[in-house]
Image (cartoon, rainbow, N blue to C red):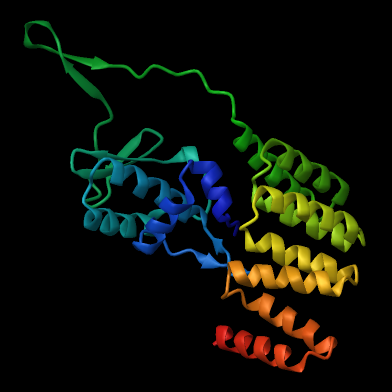
Length: 275
């Protein structure tokens, strides 16, 4: 099942990292952790995050949001275009619309899909929905499309995937994931020097992203630049002290260099974090 990174969520929903963190901390969604301890969100999480954010803005009580979203999660399919569902506040209730059907989350009752306004002589007029012109996709949306295309191409066409990731980076230089995937492709192809240069470029855009420093350390290791690799692992751990794999890799390198005390310290921290 496809999952999404924190940066994907920011690009798709236009919600800041702080808001997403607050929604996670409040229990609106419970993302899993990836191999490098990063958040991974499912399609359902994306829908629920967007919904929680908009319902908070509509001043729906938090307890009602949590209860309704738990019920809603059980009814969501594993995958669906984000435009396939519309979730909104109707008065003090939460409603879901899919196609022409609209229902209340808490009760399951169907709702009529029309709007009314007062008209002359006390009668009521029904308003038809006017179609709106589709806005051109933003650079961030285009970058996400190129990133997804890169993922699809990786198995069959490494060169095409590389170009797709480079297009994504050119459109959104602060987008984390294309750098990470492209760097792996370069290292796997033995182009470690290019990967190191790519990660240096990435760090200029996001100096506080621990994954950039971790992946650059791996590329430096592959290039046999051990001291520089250790420095990158140390920077990664300074930014993210609970990054277990960084401790493990640093321990390996210290052991290789004969730094027994440092190796033991990092191995111990790795085991503690794994527990």
